Image 1 (cartoon, rainbow, N blue to C red):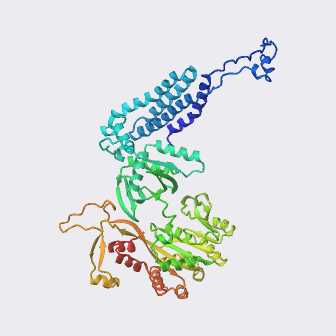
Image 2 (tube, rainbow, N blue to C red):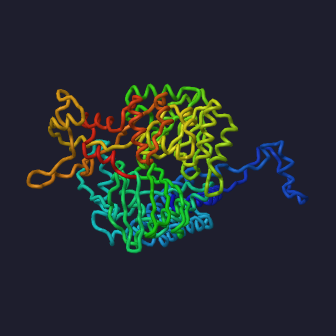
Image 3 (tube, rainbow, N blue to C red):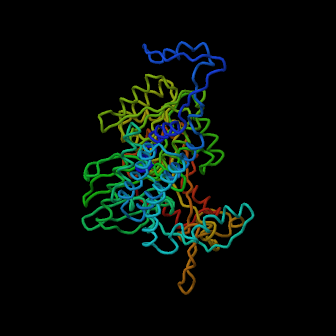
Length: 624
């Protein structure tokens, strides 16, 4: 809500008080007549002065009455309609002046002061509606008309308002519903870069609503609001999940993560990027002037009637500062196994493992490959209506919102360690505990102890495959015997981009490729890829669905390992080689234990035409 609208709504109370008094004053009480045959006594000079009226309370015919009708609903209603119109147009002037980079503070003052002054004048005049209504209309429409005249003289013809063409354009769709058709020219749509950002930033980092409102208003009034809004809008339109801002002395590099892949979004100069970041930090409840220390914050963006949660983190680097904005559409928190690329067998076996009374399900994924989504889907597979489930999360990075799952938070920046929150959670006797990302050996050891106490544990960590996930647990100094006895299943996910179905093109599968991927030649005859240039090197027209990338959306490559005696024996017999070879050894052992690897899952997607061979190679070989 704009500052002008806030002022207007606060003035509503003053309006009601003034006009109730004014409308009452238009019908003063008039003395009533005395009933026939009644004798009017001489007025008393005693105290109180109206003693003669008070003594006649039992005689209604002798009591003086007014005509009634002291409050005029018609008069008050007309003035209330004028007031509502003033609120709407004043808010429009405020927003329009900001988009046109005008002196909106000055126009806010003119519109508010003129109308509020008219309210006071009307109340003091105590005159009829024939005079007061024109006064209010003049105080409302004169400043608005002046603003429209001034703005129309500075914009193009297609942007002018209240012109005959503009009125016809606005009325046309409404008249069409009534069967009246009028011909209008298509109104040119103003680009976002010129019109200003049609987006709102709402602060959510503070504990109270007034504090958050203050942050929101300050951000909107800041010099970098326009550029910050345009940046977020551009990222949303391009389906980006993250925005990265890398600040150096020379300038700022902007990147978007679209479908799990980072792409360049163009440079920014420091004169533009610094106020932009200051605006984002301000609305996120962070210190705008702090450029070296690590900070985290959050806020909400409203664009085209949709709400998005944005999490901002920043910190110093060797060359300057890096800020990352994560855009949360809510899809990750609502994910279920049926939404992921798991086979029916994997879903059945993993759900059965989660229904056990005790055990530890280890969930892993590399950074940027959907760990939150996988954790949420895994948690949602627990029977949360008959079992008490509790999640432990960092206060500034809360992402778990699964129905019937309680949350216990910790804030390391304020000295509240994760193991303290875990102890508090254990004291509430949950039957299942979810720890979305474990990085501390002490915490993981405590979780293993809870398994032995009869609890189901879901623990997340960053790893590229199942073998690496087990190895990272051992690197937290958890004994191999404890890992083998507590871990019941390990799940790992890698995101891969899906080919755009509107522009993908098919090509023949060669016998060598089919042999390499061990695919049957009678069932797989072709693969798919993004559109390629022709023989002359000319590229096809850019696809509107994917923006010319050839990919739209992502899906998961998911491998699930269920711990058995063979896998426990493999853990106990880790060869004394360098750690990098331990991952290969554990992968091979998992395959022998019946697990289908990420590579095998990827070949299935390749054969189905869901992804391409280059994309599969990228997803399986890229570094974090």
